[in-house]
Length: 104
Figure 1 (cartoon, helix red, strand yellow):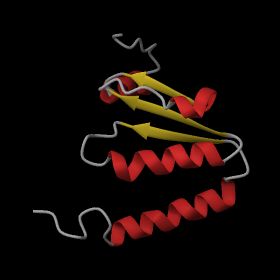
Figure 2 (figure 1 turned 90 degrees about the horizontal axis):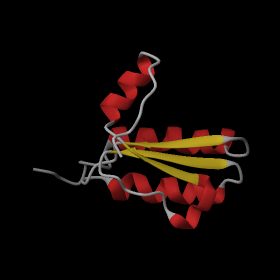
Figure 3 (figure 1 turned 180 degrees about the vertical axis):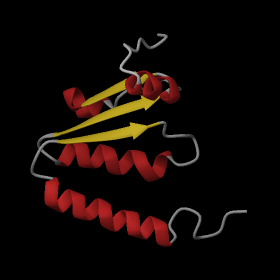
Figure 4 (figure 1 turned 30 degrees about the horizontal axis):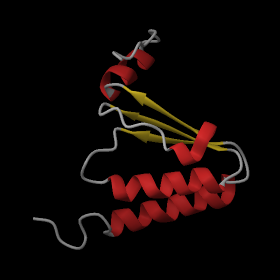
């Protein structure tokens, strides 16, 4: 059973602090935000902040990799790309330096 600390407990607050520090220190430069395998349970925690940050930072780009085939948000235009692929297969191919071809 989930309680009020399920998503926003101490670990989440620590992560938020690291995220905010990163944005403050690196936000003016080139930033690549990766959405890797965002599932059905937590998209509201990850997706809106990433989309917002991509839109706000002048040289930020978003890359989403998900097996479900979600597309990149149209409002971000060329600042966002989506890859429909099994994340495990993609990472395995990257680790072994093989060329990865998504099934679609």
